[in-house]
Amino acid sequence: MALAVIVIATAGCVTTVSDTKTPGMPFGRDSVGGRYQRSVDEVYGAAIKVINTDGTLLTEYIPHDTTNTVRAFKGRVNQNTVWMRVEEVDPQITQIQVEARTKMGIQDLDMAHELEKEVALQLAR
Image (cartoon, rainbow, N blue to C red; front, top):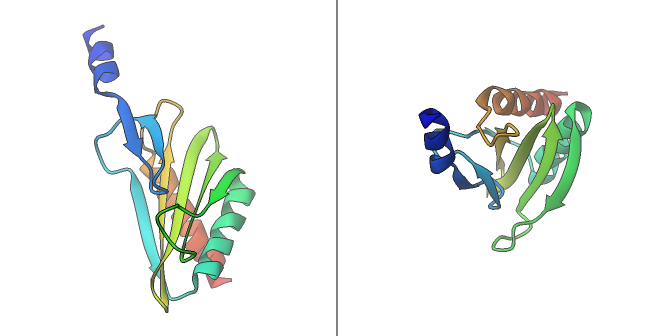
């Protein structure tokens, strides 16, 4: 019972890689990333293809405080919520960050890593 009280007391809101808020455990690493020598459009297209293959795309958006060189979306894969953010590091390098959380708000690094790897494989095709 005491453990349940501690878990509930420490739960809160976390900021996702797409700069939105969601209920979740605010401690520990919660995202993985990669950099590719591709355009934002190519990496974002590969990410969309991966999320549509593995799950469901829920929302797409450009964060308000950025330019068109940053795009993000939220999706669902196997009951987990997934966020991906694609942004230009420089004109030839694009970075992707992937975050996955369970229904309970606990980070799922294995799923995030798997999805980031699938984006890399999609770009290699």
